[in-house]
Image (cartoon, rainbow, N blue to C red; front, side):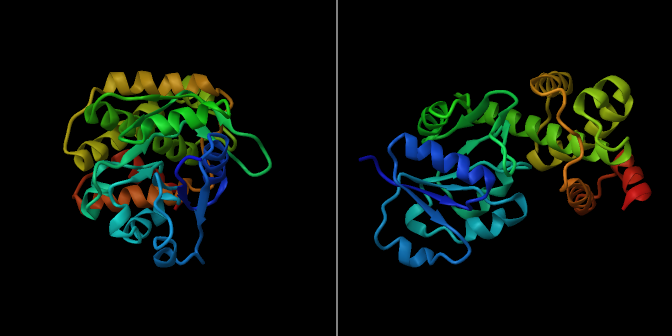
Length: 256
């Protein structure tokens, strides 16, 4: 029997990872809001702990990790950057940029292969392969940072642009009928990502990566339920850095 894996947050994506780990012969222990982590750590020596909470709950989840497990943490959130974990004394966390979605009552839908990096990356890749979800291993922290920014650009651009265009608009509609809006929104997002990551990025390469992801599911709707919250959170972050994001501010002025 392989070592157990702890999954913190058993929502839709958490359940997908749990099933993959079980198929790969890892016992899985869930952590929910009622779980006593201090009790759990007294009798479990996990392979790692995968945090599957939403973005808004990530910081509190990281604070709850016992010191004994801080050398084996994995994360999979959207809007993730190194600044989100560096304050928590984690030792080389494993990160996966998830490019599949799971909605209630449906099976997983893959857009493109999910890149992952860190000590436990191979376990993630092998387990997901058993449930037909492709993933691959990155070779450097720089590659990881680019992939995280790419995912952030995709999520934030599609969600926020979707607020201001026709209901139920797809990424194909956004790209082919609202290209100027798409680029204006993504430029604002990239301005903030550059500030947060303290590094510049190749905007053309990022746009090409985003369009490749569009092609993975051309019918993917732009505006999810969390789009207004993402817009609000993005503008609050920008304000904390005294950044002007004119297109996002205009969208917020019209809709929030």
